[in-house]
Image 1 (spheres, rainbow, N blue to C red):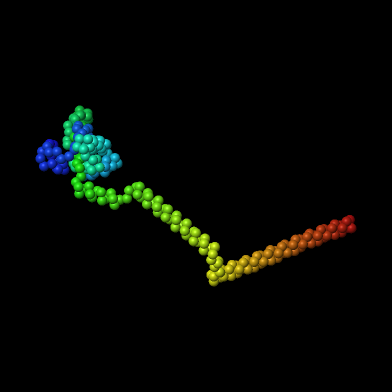
Image 2 (image 1 turned 135 degrees about the vertical axis):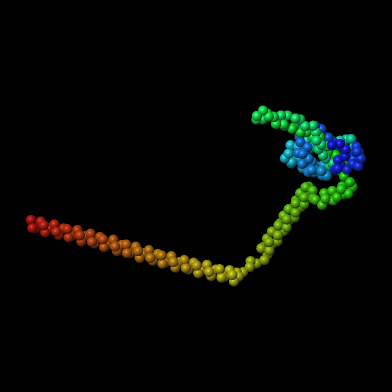
Length: 246
């Protein structure tokens, strides 16, 4: 496809509207390249480079090299500042297609088309309106160093407020008398005393029950001893009577 492109901004055939860089006979399909070019069209060169860096397509590697070449041409040939450039136009033309064949069943052959393309990127200087808008956006957004200084000053101010608060609290504790007990404290104290008395009462009852069980155990053991002694005495009497009869 010859002649000016619709997104190039040219009004006459062959008119130069910016600084361009071309990559001819790239071994990649023009359709695949156009998908990536649509992402950077109209962007600043720095933003376009960042986009191409993170695009997960093989065509992005080639396009990024062409973009760097266009920026270098603008800096050395046209004395343009790199931070004032943007992608004015970018397009991919169809290149030569290599025909190859693959054998298939029944003696047939399948055609393989290895397509190529020509990649063109044109960069131009931003207009005064675009540059002013960009400066306003950068001024509204705080820089990293400014944000770091702001965070440091905020942390220092916070430490100073904490130190003053601690000093004031220490001064009040050293000069002002300790506050007397309140009604809530007295109520809690009475509640604690009541719980303590209740615990002592339960402990006394438990000890009394334990002593009662111990006494019952001793009585049972004495009964067992007496029963054993009575049985031995009866056995002895029976043995004595047997001897007398004999």
